[in-house]
View 1: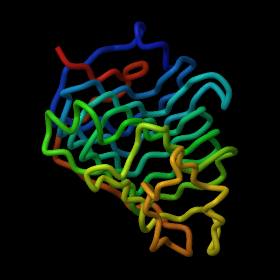
View 2: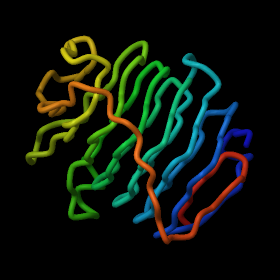
View 3: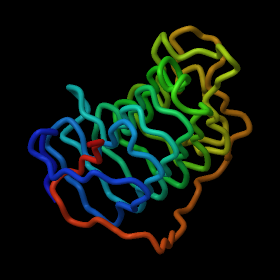
Length: 212
């Protein structure tokens, strides 16, 4: 699969669907894009390779969806492995996010309109291998806040060492403890075979999951 810019992708308007088993080598800005109100989907066991670690590329980009699960994917060679914008109540488990400039970029999540439109819960990034990214494992911008008790649960991950230096791995714009990383795994988390009975969308170009 060769990925393209968003306006060149195949478009799916879906909820409660599984996208899995794809080899996505995208040359544009995103490998898999999930739009607002596209909720309850599962993205699993995809290999997503980007065009490089300069520019503005993302392996997976969430724009205001809720309740999606990202499981067992390998994401590499992007500026942002996974980028979340105003997204809440999504889970990330068993992924390998490596060889990007930044592993996760969390922007306004959960915050603003997401907090108003959903029973907003923090996103959860657990039991992933997030290592070997050249800038940060997790990067947040200055609108991510612990306001209203929201934090990013990033516990149980392997950060590339049994004694990770979190001051070098995690960048919080406000230094307000929004990223909770303890406890963490002291060993690499080996991939698990995931099985789902949901339908699988396979072998488009890049994938855009969009609201109508």
